[in-house]
Amino acid sequence: MSLPEIVAPQEWRAARIQLLAEEKAMTRARDALSTKRRLLPMVRVEKDYLFEGPSGRASLTDLFEGRTQLIVQHFMFDPSWDDGCPSCTAASDEISAGLLEHLWARDTTLAVVSRAPLAKIERYKAKRGWTFPWYSSHGTDFNYDFHVTLDKTIAPVEFNFRDEAELEQAGMGWMLEGSSEQPGYSVFLRTEGRVFHTYSVYARGTEWLGGAYAFLDLTALGRQEDWEEPKDRAQAVRAAVPSFSS
Image 1 (cartoon, helix red, strand yellow):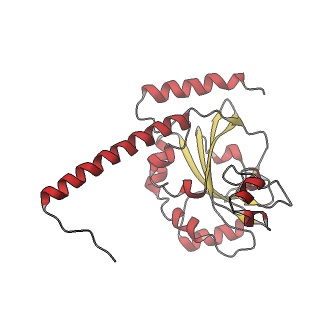
Image 2 (image 1 turned 30 degrees about the vertical axis):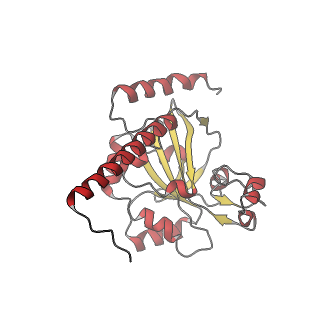
Image 3 (image 1 turned 60 degrees about the vertical axis):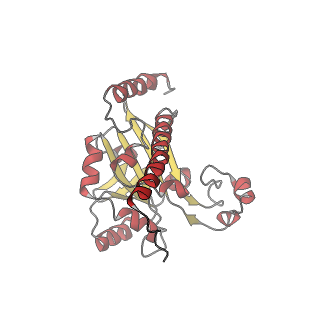
């Protein structure tokens, strides 16, 4: 393995200052992108999805656990598999009690959803020692509607906002063959008794997630640290909802 070059302290400091300027530029660009993400329009969820969870059947609204926002991790777990996806497993290992509490403090719930039957999910969850909420979407359209289970015999294939023709053109035609599970996160907002889909991210867009701030940056209400902006944003979202057709 190649190690960094050894230099004098002043040379190291100059190089560090140069890198710091680039880091600040990236931080400003990330913050600007997060602002644009919060301003995305949203779509009302019309279907009545029913999941299986530890306490029995649960609707999408139930997954919010009474909070305003919901982040769903689409965990790759095909019904025929005995264990969950290793990469999704690595991500889920980082879902700690502290992370969940920080999200709850911002009126946001994180839940995991997979297509495997609940019995397999519960067995794997116990094996890993996890305690976060994990639901089965087995037998529902949920995974297909949010483009994390791809099977053109069931629903038109779309992944990372590319349709079949675009996937073929990008050299990803293998996604059109058979059935496959894919990773992703989808974000929802609940207000006035209605649920809205605000954001989804797939592929390499999920790799930088980790920590409460990264998750909150995916949501419509953001980090809610600058109290004036989130309050205005929340009021704007709620004010806009009645204008949507019921």
